[in-house]
Length: 155
Image (cartoon, rainbow, N blue to C red; front, side):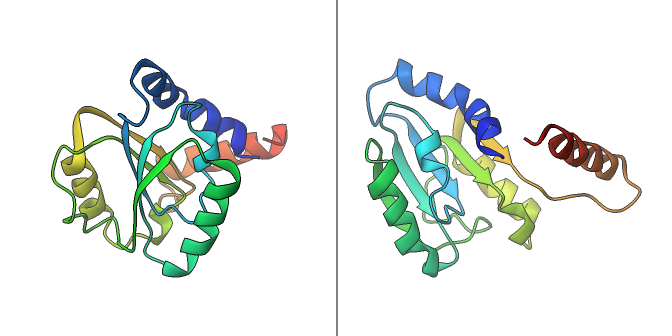
């Protein structure tokens, strides 16, 4: 259901990868989970760093990588939260991927500050989530309409 949207969403990252040498594009994924994004990004290898606060996901991530994402290089798979990326220097990633993670992040502002800090100038945030805003807000209404569109078209 979400796969076609993610493929389209990651198109600019795939274009960047195609324009550079293999493994020269550095990607940080927050909350890598079971590795669902890994096979959706680029036919050219990326240098991928993953943070995941739940260590129990690591075997599933490695399984997905082995089965579907062999073209990429995993630099690190770190047990960490998005609010604390102190192990990374500033301006060190070309892209940060955050999909279906913010619903579990207690300090969204802190996480966004850290993302901004580690992204290189001109770097891109690839964000895809399902978190609705407070009842009655404009963003919540947009979220509800978006859900109905997804359901109507069976996306």
